[in-house]
Amino acid sequence: MSSESMLTLTAESWTWYAVTWVVVMIRMASRRLLLGSWRKLQVEDALMLLAMATDTVLIVGMNIISTTSSNLIDPNDPTPLDAANIQERVFGSKMVLVVEQMQCITIWLVKACLLIMYHRLTMSLRQNLAVKIVAAYAAVTFVVMEILYLGVWCRPFHEYWAVPPKSTQCSAATNHLITNAVFNISSDIMIIVIPLPIFLKSTLSPKRKAVLCGVFAVGTFTIVSAVLNKYYSFNQPFGSDWTFWYIRESSTAIIAANLPLTWTLMQRVFNLKSFAEKYYSNQRSGGVQTNSQFRSTNYIDRQRHRRRADSLGSLGETDRSASEEHINPIPLKIYQKHEVEISTLPAEDDNGRRMRMASTDSLPDGLKTVTNVRGGQSVQSRRTEEDGSLKSVGGAVV
Image (cartoon, rainbow, N blue to C red; front, side, top):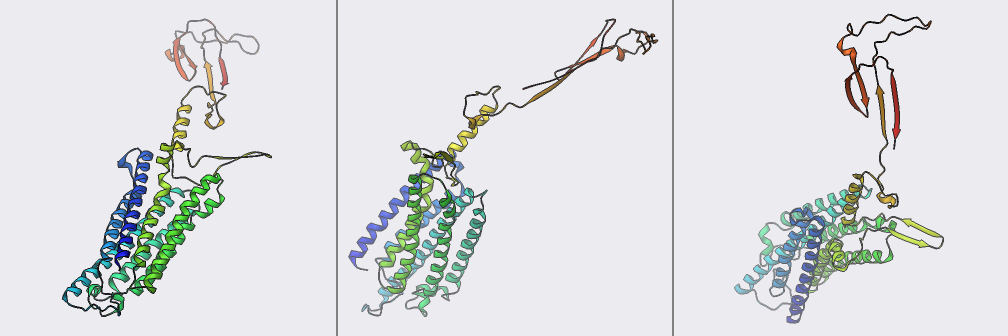
């Protein structure tokens, strides 16, 4: 690699690296605001930090590769293979192996973060099945790719840094590059297609759709970068263009995966409205209110409304003028009141003749007790009245 290309690669790679860290830090701050504590960060947040660690190794390793040679020897290179040159190429070949592994791990970690986010957003939607299928596909293809790269294409394994190698698969890694291109690009396309039906059916405002289109554009650029880095790897294996596109692919993949999760902090800093707010289309034919089917990753407003509804439900009265969105109707209450009185007066039959009754002294104590049931509570009292009646009252109130 020429000195000019090395300087360009150094400047561009570290610029991309700085931008990705800024976006990731904004994402982490947004997640902290959303979840309320650093300890509540979820598995995708940890995976993203791991992806940044592997991306760091990738950037450092790529800059080292730009200053060294590998066991992919250019036939037109007049440099003799002396001991010093062989030692340099052995080291460079090992760095190529490290960079390739870090690039694969970084890209697939980003895929995992996106698929976990998709899974949370589509829990009650039909797209959740598609998310599971794509996740299984990505996991299986990664395992297959690693097995082939580390255990099949180049045997024995140390031939990856042998100078010169016995097989071109240990230097050019053509089979691995083809496998990686097929698995990587196909899974990227699947991941970017999953939210498209929801996006197309959504009724978000044009501004918010433009923001999402920007995120999709970054994801599309990631796929283009994946295609171009393989194109230059096949057509210009001794050149340096492929190194630029490796870095562009991993960097834009990280940025695209983190951008949707930066909205919470942006909302707080710039006093923006919730991304998932209802979009009202005020047409002259009548104001038609439609609710977006696209779920935002920002759950603050939803939680706020839920807490407000719970507090309203605990009140004894509801303001009739309040918005219908927050009305919690008071449930119907039904009560029944019974009054039972036992008398010692003789009763009369249908012909007016008195019937013989037992005296109060001969009555058991239990029959001298009057049970009054009022409002669901039982009250017992002794009665000394000489007459009484049986009363039963029922009623209902709202």
